[in-house]
Length: 248
Image 1 (cartoon, rainbow, N blue to C red):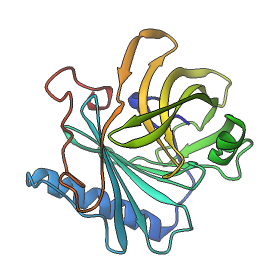
Image 2 (cartoon, one colour):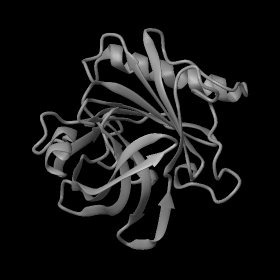
Image 3 (cartoon, rainbow, N blue to C red):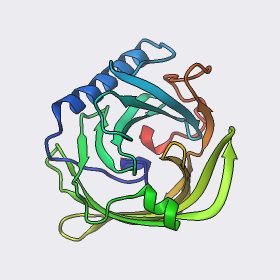
Image 4 (tube, one colour):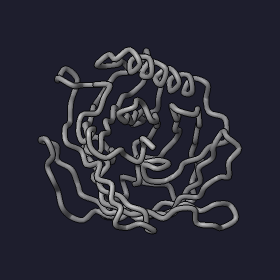
């Protein structure tokens, strides 16, 4: 399942209202993270009632933090993505990695997935059959056109171990389609998925229009509560090299 957004991998959108409690939790997290980044602190805390689960330091100057919150449905998680300039977005996913809601730090955009979807993403199906297709619609709160996202994930059969973490290698392809039928983006790549965490992790990705322009955001370090670097506010790998697409 593609996990980036906007220039990270593909666009995401929203118009339908979200539950107040969920919105407050996400915005509180963004606010606390932004404050921590501006004060040059080294770590941050998830909102009250939430507990940190995992930090992943990745290539291309990205770091991801995962937490769970009281009152959410079983299997739901929050994922925050950071670039070197601070928080990029916070996304809520379910146990099958459906993108329930996404909040953007820089412009206040909120996106949500229309459920039930025509063909919802399903980690269960991917693990059981090695292939999963998806076809769903994303709406936004900015009045922008809805986007239909359709594509596939495929397990390659390869298992890799990164920093002691067993991960299944995947390949994916997808496109986003506007209401008038125009294809706004086509992308592809190879990434990783964890059966234990039921989460995707970034790998390599590229646009179908520029297949030679490959972004490699593969994970490097998996950090758990109590370990040095857990919930660190800044990414550490490749940050002095080429700016990532998320920084643009």
